[in-house]
Length: 247
Image 1 (cartoon, helix red, strand yellow):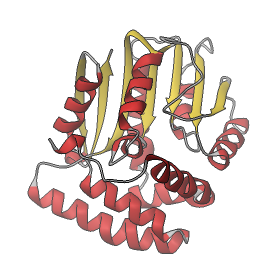
Image 2: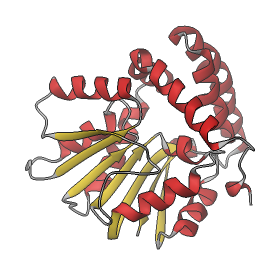
Image 3: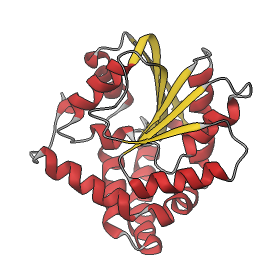
Image 4: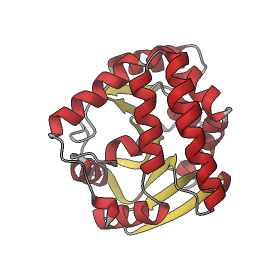
C-alpha cells in the first residue's frame, strides 16, 4: 500500500533536514503562504479550527504550530476565554514569531512549547482535541518517524477526542490534478524559492505536495494507527482537505 511507503533514509537525517529547513524560513514564511495560496490557507485553517471546536473541547493543542496561524484562529473562536490552548513546535525561530504575533493581539493565553512530535511532554489523554495545519505531511510523508508521531498523537488525546488536520490533497479530477501539480512546480517550487531565497525548502514543499497521499490513504493511515473513525471534507475540488479523526 503506497501510504506506508518510506524512503530509505536514516531517521535522524530526516529529522535534521526538516529542522534545518524550518529554522531558516520563518522570516518569509507567512508572506509566502499568503502569496502562494492567494490567502486560501487562512480560510481553510479557520474552517478546520471551527470543526475542532464544534464539540466544545476544554483542552486543545495545535501541533507543529509554526508561526501560530492555526492556534490564533482557535483563540479568536474561543470567546469565553475558559479554554486551555497549547501550541507545540520543534523550531525555536517559528515559535518566537508565533509568540510575537500573539502578543500583538487581544487573544486568550496560549502556552507555547518547544518539543518533538514523537515525544511530547503531556500526560496520556490530556487533550480533548489536537489540530495540525499544513504540517501533517511533514510528519508522515516518507518520514521514518511516522509511527512514532501517530502513536504519540493518539496517546495524548482522550477517548472520543478529535484530531483535526488540514492538509494538501490529491484531486480526483485529472485536469485539476494536472493544474495543481503544474502550479506546485512552477509557482511554489520556482517562484516561491526565488522570492523567499530558500529554494530547497520550496522544492521540498512542492514535491511533497505533488506526491502526497490521497484522502483515502490518509483515512486508512489514521484508522490503522488506532482512530475509530475518520471524516474527510474536500476543499476547492480536492486540492486540500480537512480530516476529522475520532479516537
